[in-house]
Image (cartoon, rainbow, N blue to C red):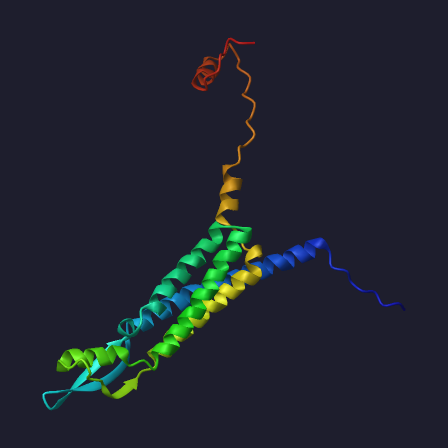
Length: 213
C-alpha cells in the first residue's frame, strides 16, 4: 500500500497559529509584568554593607539598590511601558517596541550584575560619615538582591524576544477599535401605517416625515 501523507489544511494552520499566538502572548505578559515587578522590588532592597572608621570606631553602612544604580529600576519601567505599547502599534512599530522591550531587559541584567560588585555608593557614605573624602568602606559584602534584579531583567528579555518572534500573531488595540467603530449598515425604517397614531409618533421621533410617499 502506498503511504499517504497528510497535508495540513489552511484552516488547521490558522488554528495552530492562533494557539501559538495565545500561548506566546500569555507567557510574554507574565514574564514582562513579573520581570518588571521583580526588578523594581529588588532595587529597593539592601545590596551591600560595610563599615567606615569614624572617630576611632567602626560605623556600619548599608546601601540599597537605588543607591548603587538607578538604571535597573528605570529600565524596568521602560520595559513595562513597552510591553503595554506592543498592543497599540502594528507591523514595524510593533517590532521596534518589542526590540525596546528586549533591550530594556538586557540592560537591566547588565546594570544589576555590575552593581553586584560595586562599592562606590558605600565609599561615598563612608566619606560623608568620616568627613574624609578619601575614606573608603571596609569589610564590604553584598547580598543576593542584585542577582534577583538581574533575574527580573532576564524575564523582561524573554518577553521582548517573544514579542519579536510572535508579536505578529498578537491582537492589537487599533484593530479592535477599527472593527468596533466601523459603520454598520442602516436598517430600512419600518413602514408607517397612517391609521395607527403610535406609528406616526414613532416616525416623528425618528425624524421622518410620516406623510411622505
